[in-house]
Length: 137
Image (tube, rainbow, N blue to C red; front, side, top):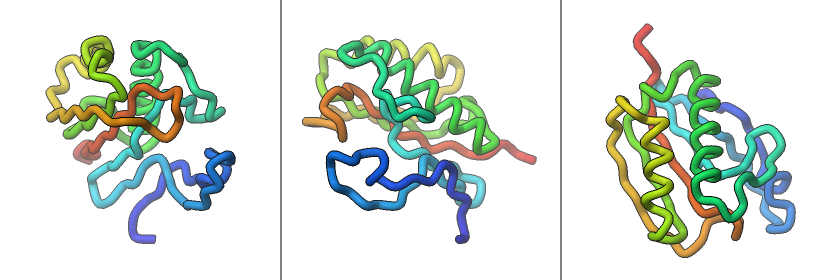
């Protein structure tokens, strides 16, 4: 493979009730660019959903995941360039953006926010998609 795939998995293991069979990964490093899979409020190691019903706790888990994955790729939060936020309810925007803002204080990425009908699991209220650049060597 040309690119580095980080934390490979199959959707059949992650979403057994949905009868899927897709080979995916949590991050791809292509050249110096890091593309993170949309991060949901799910523990990366156990696949357990975190903060059910609590948008602030879900946003916190999402950012823990983003931070962990970037570090596994050799980068950190300060290397984030682009963030896309998916919310299932516009009423969660303020509390979720406040949490994301605490994690990204001083980073100044570009942000896009969308309100969607649903995410992959009904208990998820937020998903965050990130593009970052590896630090200079």
